[in-house]
Image 1: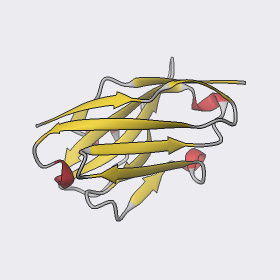
Image 2: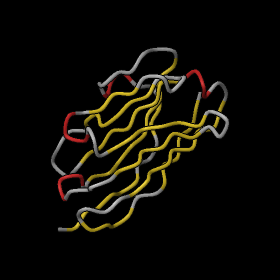
Image 3: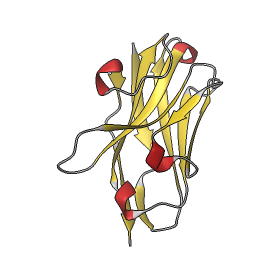
Image 4: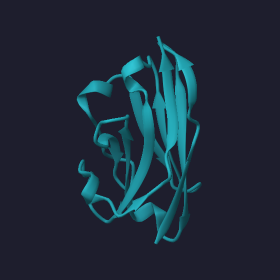
Length: 124
């Protein structure tokens, strides 16, 4: 099993940047595909970005391409989401998720482990 704890959320003005972190505990973190999802009030949780176990492959939803970057440091058991040029529509609770030994998946049901979420609010 793996436990996930997100941090780095907060309030930022439109055009600003934030870096989210997701610290994982448990064994074999480097074997997990990691994903970031987000959920705003009244909407379903949706895929934002994903990264394979080695970091060699990354995937993004279209609305964040060119603005967000996912990365991981397996030595630190941590995955990051660098968010630049933030927009008010990026406001949401951001969750990291993990699934063992598969390629990047974009469905909520494809992931086995979830963090508690961190709030990101972008003001206009």
